[in-house]
Amino acid sequence: MAETFSFKVLATDGKARRGLVSMPRGEIRTPAFMPVGTGGTVKAMYMDQVRGIGADIILGNTYHLMLRPGAERVARLGGLHEFARWPYPILTDSGGFQVMSLSKLRKLTEQGVTFRSHIDGAPYEMSPERSIEIQGLLDSDIQMQLDECTALPAKPKEIERAMELSLRWAERCKAAFGDQPGKAMFGIVQGGDSAAMRLRSAQALKAMDLKGYAVGGLAVGEPQSVMLEMLDITCPELPADRPRYLMGVGTPDDILKSVARGIDMFDCVMPTRAGRHGLAYTRRGKVNLRNARHADDPRPLDEESDCPAARDYSRAYLHHLVRSQEALGAMLLTWNNLSYYQKLMQDIRAAIEAGAFEERAAGITEGWARGDI
Ligand SMILES: CCNc1nc2cc3[nH]c(NC)nc3cc2c(=O)[nH]1
Image 1 (tube, rainbow, N blue to C red):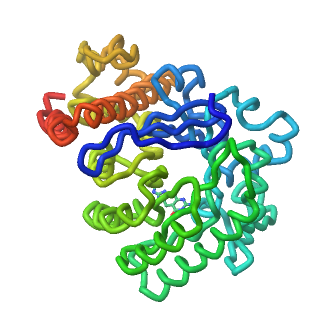
Image 2: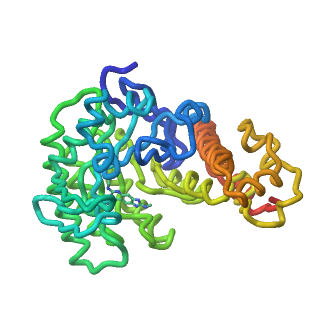
């Protein structure tokens, strides 16, 4: 394995890129989808199953882990890879986004954010420096800067304030991270739905010469067209030889359209959360197994899938498990959904390598529309 962090673009097709991130703990084939492992677990999955469906990297949430079981405790127990038995790369978020969406009594200043835990009300403060320290205690491979994500719609002044603050925090995170060859710290482009602010943020972060760049502040309720427009503006400003990570995205359609605009990495809770709520992603579209129409359907979700959850169980059985709120329902549908997302990424990578991304993406989209699911 590589001693240092590196990224190589292996093939392009239009703006779509097929790449490879190499790190000491393993390689990440891009475009990549990162299953979300919030509290050090990809909910309802064993880690060897997560690996088995082809995931190269998972995401861990700093906010959850710092509150419970605590970053220092995870460090004492050997770090997050040892703790959760996932020896491959882990990307951790910086905690800021979830502080603002989950915690109570939060206060944001130049110094950082202070807040009370949503679990027990205990007081915490998270500065850029403390966020990087926590991610280091977790032994995270790719660490995210602390930023401020503006909820949309927002006034231009508000977008500018949060974007400029995030740039100053990026500098502080870069300084706190220092020089860790086998790891990386990614900056996060902010700027809301403002082209000018997006340009300003991307150009300032590029000047910091970071190992990777996330596009933040999107998938926060704006129309897909606005998200895609911001990618059209932002991606060309980012260095072509560094990975680009679109945070919190997304549906399979979001992913296809974002890869077409130059995005390399994705994370989203949809496949895992939907699995726990009885929703299955298939190449013919979404199937809601809660629906009574499945009660007598002997067909599997997808007879052509190589995932046992999609191939070996009848929809009638899955419907029964979901209706009965059996744990196995969440387990099988999560397995199916993550397997579908990894297969989608595998097909995307192959399409770019073949120079056939546009037509194969159209074929994938038609599959959803064809229905008969
Ligand atoms: C690293 C934490 N910072 C950070 N996380 C995010 C997570 C997101 N998740 C979604 N949609 C589900 N948008 C996001 C934006 C950000 C963002 O702008 N910043």
